[in-house]
Image (cartoon, rainbow, N blue to C red):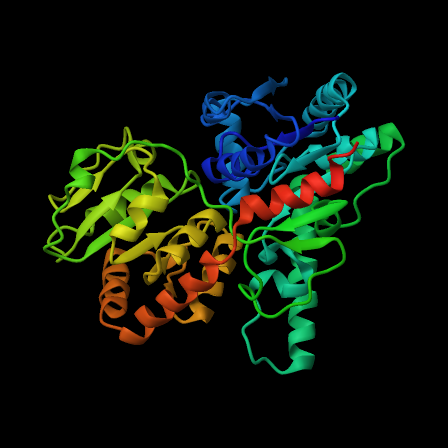
Length: 404
């Protein structure tokens, strides 16, 4: 039986744990292997017992920072230039020749769609509905006049495709031409797989009709066995408890500024952001506990409210906790994910450019006293809990590719 080949961006915690959650659910039925270019979270894959094929060129810390800055719109430039794309595609094709995978599954390994096309390997994207043209990338407010909604959707999708062409698709399509492969007309064509798994419950981004070959599977929650330090496990609950999580893509300067702003506030804060603020010389208030990575699925429910960056994994984990959310997106996709929670009625989003301690504290105070928002958060959590994303993804993948 041919294996499934997972291709995460192993420098991103959420991306790595999402791929891992699916692979773990598949492994008793079908062999699974991983393709990476290195990254801080690659060790999670090897510790889970999966074979890892690290390809060249390996990603340097400087290159990873460049990718994040482009992704967050803090820097204009290509993610990978033509030579980098060509080298990665060459490495990926060589691995396909070695493993003969039944399919390659990715969520953000940005040359795999091209190599899969060239190598005639079925491609499975794992995405969220805020990547879809049909939702206007989650940026269209509800109740908009239909003709205006259509115009807004067209504008958003054209703007996204233009940015995608400038930062990613131009080098990819130039390499595609070398191999005689069809180019990707737009960003939306690029992240449309032969099959696409949408990692959220239906209705998260409005009641849309899923496009062909798109399948809602529910959330992929990270359930890694990170330790819970004593200062977190034993944190007193004499004041409201804030869970402050910025994933692996948060902007360090913003994180540091907001944490310092909790000085004198009537809350206790648990913040797994140690790696983000290391070396910044931040003086932390007494009511803030900073840690390394935590098992968010266990710690988030301990809190009364979450402050998050809006990555889909963090969003779904916060939603499953059943508590209100304050969100500060670091890039447009995260803003859109957070706006989906705002429309569910239990979140407030603060734009990154307006992220300040007074705004954050005001939003926290408002939601802590909003009984309707707290009720809606609990209500939505029961909906999210009905979906076992890893099991549904595994069932689909095994049915689709397990006989090859």
